[in-house]
Image (cartoon, rainbow, N blue to C red; front, side):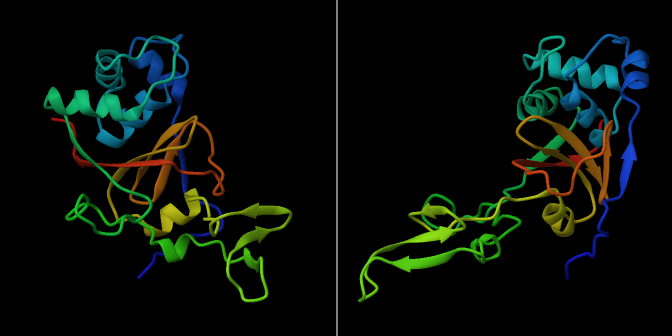
Length: 194
């Protein structure tokens, strides 16, 4: 049964300047993956910074959370699993893999309509507003949708340009996230830092 999320997500502000100063990096910026890892894994900012640095993150530059998580596993500091947002139907290559948070049916754009090319209905295109598509368009996966589906636990979510932590349905970040922001990656922290 889906959890009912209020219109405004539960948000816990993380003081990025204080985290950076305590971790010995007061002038650091573009460190959202470091802060997300530190918060979600329950580790110190300095430890998360070292993990991201070992994975190839340069000072004052953004970085992929996946690479840092893999280094954390190699160091024995944490364990994680990637959660698929979109369902993959079983075939020879995907048997046993995660089914995804959302099915294809849930992601179909109900506002799109099919326009047949001929009177017999053979061929055609999908239309939504003034836009045309060859296949039925899909909805983007938003923070609001993900928060309703995520079970209790510790997660790192990522948009195209930002990463943040979610712990038991509460968003932990230095700035509020819009519920309509598109989520592209989701990782579950399986065990906390040792």
